[in-house]
Image (cartoon, rainbow, N blue to C red):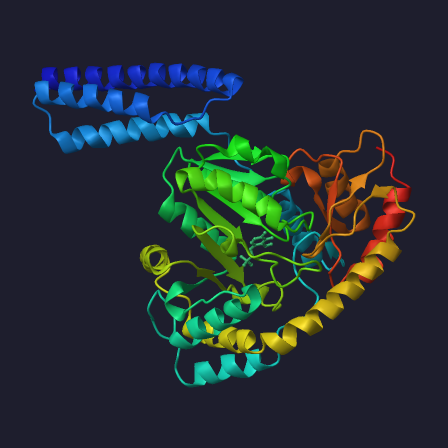
Length: 447
Ligand SMILES: Cc1ncc(COP(=O)(O)O)c(C=O)c1O
């Protein structure tokens, strides 16, 4: 017995040695792939290897299921080793966290770093929420959502995007960030490639890294041919951080590439209501689109954590399984509040847009004279200017500014290779004083 145990120990340690050797080889392959611009996942190599592994397992009389498990573990660890670590939710969230810490010690911080709109939610929301709680809508519910919410969302989407959405094609989610994570988890597999246009919201990269997906970043819409082989593309129009709205022509050229492999277009419509120029809904250009929406921004309901997805019924059913598995359901009283907000959208959105324009005008005035090069955005809540100062490092600047002046801004480097840029939330309750202080800080900044 002791003898046998000693040999088991020896074999186990040998396995660990072999695993370490395998990982070292994988890292060398990863390096070569990066140099040659090759994808992380190679189906042909993987299939051939599995055929050999499975034959070996049969020859040694091993259980096929055990072999499949070992093989899957090895493949997913290879993929993880080849995909660079994402930066979590992004440096702006780090700035926000530190700002909150400073505030807890009783010091005011001017918030220009998060996408927290200055308006509150539509008035009907409060009563709906309270009434739903009084009615006892505080119990477990179904993942697909209440009929009232799905109907209100499909009606608003039909009106907003000029489509014919129906309630069965809608599912509520706890915010749109979780919706995107749910979609990536449900429809993609480790090693799949997912495309994005830079600059991009940092959470996309963080999620891709968490799910072992390979992120393909393009610098301009003229580079869509680089997206060959992607399983999905995440598009945000108007975009966070630069406010860009995709033109019909740009969407068509993207659709042409995605159509070749039937890739999924994930349209992050977080700012769809907040567009100054004419926005073409991606779902009207490309059939395999899933649209992700939120009540956080235009409806001012960030803390309610409520969003919704629109896609064909088959996709919605698959997402319902993921939602059911992970969170069971979005609280019914939250959905009631959201339904009231969506039902009032026709009156509410034009008022919000008036506010947004006045905030943008104010920001352009307040920042005049600052060493910033910027365009007026097509939509969303942000400015994404280049800082015209030598050797400017947005990360260093953002944290210094927060500690010294108590102004919070988002470093450009969170959104891609934009060390010389800042993302400034111009539609912020702190805009008036915060933007003036930011201009003064930039004017006197020495790196
Ligand atoms: C582009 C984009 N998508 C999604 C979200 C997530 O919003 P929420 O999870 O509050 O719906 C944000 C929030 O800042 C965003 O900027």
